[in-house]
Amino acid sequence: MKRLRFSLPFPAVLLLLLAGLGAAVAEGDKKKTEEEKKPAAPPDPNLVIKIDFEAAEAGAVPDALTVMDGEWSVAEIDGGKALRLAPAPLSESAVQLGASQKGGGVITARIRAEAGKRSHPRFGVALHGLAGFRLRLVPARKTIELSKGDDILETAPHDWKKNGWVRLELTVREKGEEAWTVEGRAWNEGKPRPEKPQIVHEATGVKLSGKGSVVGTPYTGLPIFYDDIEIRKTGAPPEDAP
Image 1 (cartoon, rainbow, N blue to C red):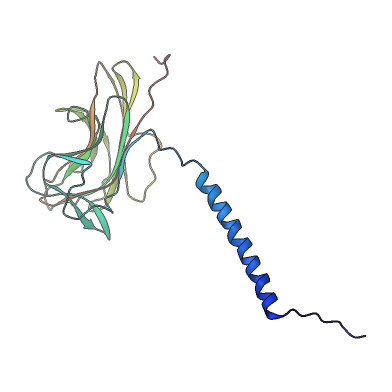
Image 2 (image 1 turned 60 degrees about the vertical axis):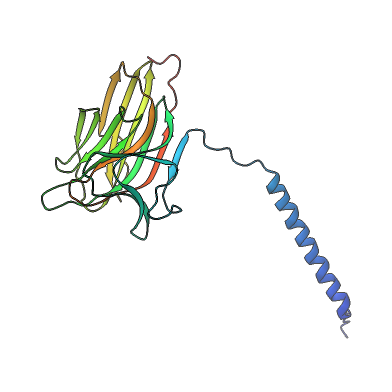
């Protein structure tokens, strides 16, 4: 039995292929238009600032930062960029970032410093301006400490890994009028974030207002590096909170 074969002239085949291609392109354009019509994701209302310095110019200070004390600039390190606190002048240096806050908040940062032969650096994060709470790592004492002004309020042990990155997290939660719960965490790079804070402090009769900051004192004569700084708001307590 003979098989029947049908063939189309080349122009007809070409027209069919072009028609199919046109339909595919039209479908793609339709999907693209539908995607463009979708509303953009709303900005995170609790995010105050998040910065990793990769897009910042080396040797400069980003506009979002305000230097209070010390010599600060963006520098290259470990194949990326970070904020560098110069070893001189030797002082308790600070740089503020983000908008001023009156309510609760949380600040986190990765920090790297080197130990000297007979000296250690001191560094940390803070909230609500220069008069607010500070969480500092004090390698010379193998502790983290919570302070406000010149007063050390709480301490907890911490085994700092010298010359490595460490994360610090300071959280201030509003409990009521001029009442706060302050929490501090510290963990070395590569380790999980502690579920429970190493430091917990209850404060009453305290008014808080100001910007977040990172701080440091380069006692070793070596620079301190800061990266992945993030500041967020924490929700206000419910109206029936004690």
